Length: 350
Ligand code: PBG
Image (cartoon, rainbow, N blue to C red):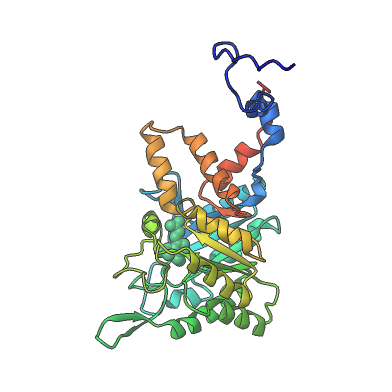
């Protein structure tokens, strides 16, 4: 006859659903952890945003982004060479002009600072990375909006979608003529991807890529960027950038941009929008990028400067998390420094 199982003694024999199942075994040594890590980052997953300011004689620090500068044309070339040496996927260029006007004339001037910088960067990169250009008017307009304005029915100011598309089309062709390998429309105007794609194709630039800022939210985390490009915005961008609470709407924006010919789509900002990023990564038929924006950078730098967090670990974890959520490409101001850490030889296995 069968005996009843002896009562487990909780001191010696704690009740465990499955004693053979010990997840900690996969964490015992650095070598084991490395073997089973699910998310891996390579320098080629990273893109470095760079600011170039007209008329500068020396690189100028950006107070709210410690470690980031506005470049001169010479220091930009050096930064691009360093990015290429580090194995980055690309650089994303932003121009800071000396003169701004209502329609952002500087953006379409072939001798405007951004277009000169594109040519400089292409020469410095020497085919080793992708030179990307931000395609937006906010750095070039005196009112700071991403498009051209018209008075609304009640005398309010409206960002004119279709008039802005004319400017973007022209800007895309000028950037392509300067040598940009990729243009990145970031103004969140409807139909901007279709319009830019058509303009590029008609001018013979069928091989220039378009990276769509597809799900770009009206975010407080762009604050330090406005310092970086010295832009003072009248009002806000809520009539064109997305409402931070909206998740479903990202799918609609991505679908539209893909249908309009986007080669890659982007979610921005990154860390506060990892749910959106995971949604987009799960369904997008084209590669997905995410932009770890200026405010995300500033938060970690500020906390680290105060000794409140471990700077390197926080940077590595934040970028890894964006990768884990599904971004194939990550724009981050730490790209070159982080790439250096990623290629350090493996240390002790314990
Ligand atoms: C628009 C643009 C912005 C950023 C990238 N492209 C500013 C905005 O939309 O207000 C922000 C990037 C950052 O905060 O790091 N040209």
